[in-house]
Image 1 (spheres, helix red, strand yellow):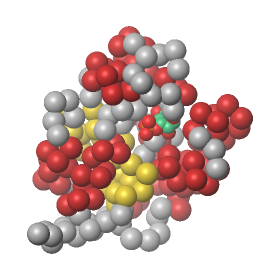
Image 2 (cartoon, protein in one colour; image 1 turned 45 degrees about the horizontal axis):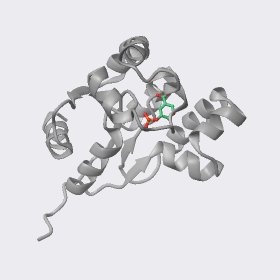
Image 3 (cartoon, protein in one colour; image 1 turned 60 degrees about the vertical axis):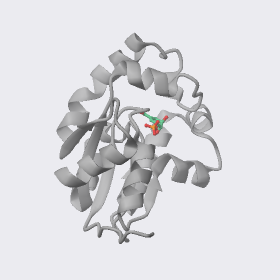
Image 4 (cartoon, protein in one colour; image 1 turned 90 degrees about the horizontal axis):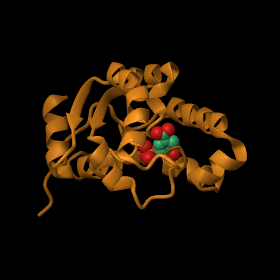
Length: 174
Ligand code: S3P
């Protein structure tokens, strides 16, 4: 039987390192909340008609970061959504400011070992090329930790939890 879905008063932006579970948790939130999911990477891939690795190699990372910022800015209009952000989004202060204007920012965390396990067979993340070791992941995580934490309204760890459990925790904390 269909449960009545929860009303979402503002956007929820899921941020965090690659493989921390943003996409999976956004779908679990969508099962509970009456709000669409916006998967930023997917939107950009459709717009550019190119995979993420191809955008990075043919147009460069700086180009990718610009179209990512443009997409976030567009999101200020329209129905409240669950936004699964690319892992690099909180690195730019202007992106954080955009997200703060229209919603709550939720940081998902996971241990480097958990991340490695989730991304080890994935070739769609150019920044993990040559970095698929606990140490390689830890180093990049360390570089990003401060900005992730500064951006976050709430933080939820994802190790050894189901997506439903994480979604429940997020809604309780918000
Ligand atoms: C990136 C994360 C990726 C994607 C791109 C860059 C990053 O998204 O946007 O490869 O800089 O952390 P996911 O976090 O969804 O893997």
